[in-house]
Length: 433
Image (cartoon, rainbow, N blue to C red):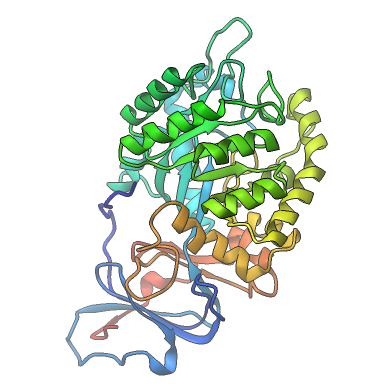
């Protein structure tokens, strides 16, 4: 689902010149490009500077913000399709109820801002974030990525989403919906939709961070997943994301009709083929095995599972890359750190994905997964102006995008949100795109 945005900042037309354009479509870069954005925040031109429309006569429009990119790289705003913004890095989801909710709210707003400053202009939260944050971003109460949220995750008792204490006490502050039959699964969908969910998330397997199961354990039955998918279809045709790590549960999720496989650590050739036939996305969240392992801060059961699965994960996701699976970008922050989301691109490249393909996975393909590719995900005429300007050449060194210090400008909906170049002082009178 998508939502209109009420902007909290004025928008002047933008003319961004002297940039190397990587437009997110997979096309070859344009070495000397100009991008023009109108006062509604819509891209009107993106291409070679030599072919860009000329300036209008004096006084045609009172103000235009002209940005000299200085040969830097201009890309679409990125997506993170798997985050948990209401949790601090490394926080145990079963203990959030012990925290002051006011502090959680303020800290979440800070994490959202840091994520935007890292170059992520759209994010999908897959449990823990109330729909109020989405509305707050839409209406300008907070600055951060535009949001889609699952609100809570649907799990069976003792499954990956059941983080209650052994005596049944729930300290997760309502992170999950428990469902142990097909009918209960349908009711759980209705409850999360009532809470404002844009999509539905289910646990098709156990997991690493959950205390009572393992990644190879199966979660909801295939028929329960199918019931969730059907119920989500009946209520606005919402997508269904499946936490799915072990291969048996991955297969159940695929057969059940989900939209995306989250993590996919144990994916095999059969699952790769089935997902490909059905157009199902894989969101591998490699940050969890590259940057999400810390023996000093993790419970021992979590650490042991992570170390046991990290090599297997890299091997299987590398094979899925080689096989041409349909990837979207996700990090699972807060399992890994917030605010360095685009390090995920480096991990994809480390496992064999070409840098340009990794950028497409984080832009156009992710926009397709979220159902917004008709207006986001590429720097092309008619799309909303979500733009990232970075130092360095990410095709030569994809790692430059992983350091937020290299992200010198972020534009969202045509509004300059991050400005390390003094763009606010670069307004030129009487010019227009």
